[in-house]
Image (cartoon, rainbow, N blue to C red; front, side, top):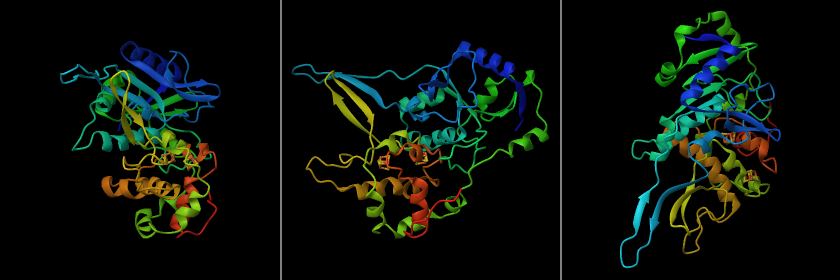
Length: 337
Ligand code: SF4
Ligand code: SF4
């Protein structure tokens, strides 16, 4: 695919042009953390930007979302009005490739063959994803493909004072004025491969789906769970976790809210029975869903190695260590980077 070289000034001019048509969201620093917010039209992420605290999923699948409103009328059927579909055209600039890939995983769930979520679909169709490849990984990251283009419409590589731009999708190609810029030569493209990554071969090469099949009833889950406080931070910050429930509020709305398999009420039934009665079954479910059930159904693990759960788990229950322990049949090993 053709790649183009832009100066920082060129990039700002192009983004400003996009801003005339789209709401441009970019990583915005507030209280020492980055999250996606309104782009100010002049600054680009500096060296302190590694990734956003919150994953981009809430830009497509918000934490709380009204699906429909209803009004009860005495003696009649309730009047129901579906919520309007989001129409805003947006650009998300500066998303990391692991997070862009997470959107392609969410697509499998929300835009599958059997069922398409109209709210998610509208946001995906109206959003242009411009990702920015990491120059250096965080200690907690363990993605093995920092150059992945999956889920991105356009990919950017930062090269000192220039940016290498690669339009990927048709949407990306249509939004990028390629005729205005020079095509990049291969020497520069080769340079990109020098970017450092955290290699995590022990995990990347492991066939965990087979291992997980064998250890469903293993004491390993209880042992791992002893540390976990079931706070749900790992699933709320995970870009690929997508479980939700739907509740009624007093104003007469059906609201979809994020949920977490780490919560005790997640599988609790109206009878009071809970098929996952303790933290042991809940932790097992989270790992199984990501590394066994999702691959069984969609052919790919539901983890992009962003490291958010590694960094933010309050008890340092490191998913990399969990995976290594599973790979080694329960034996505890220190991970090597
Ligand atoms: S963030 Fe850590 S403590 Fe909280 S639920 Fe996840 S694994 Fe357990
Ligand atoms: S499981 Fe952890 S490392 Fe993997 S995608 Fe989710 S938050 Fe990121």
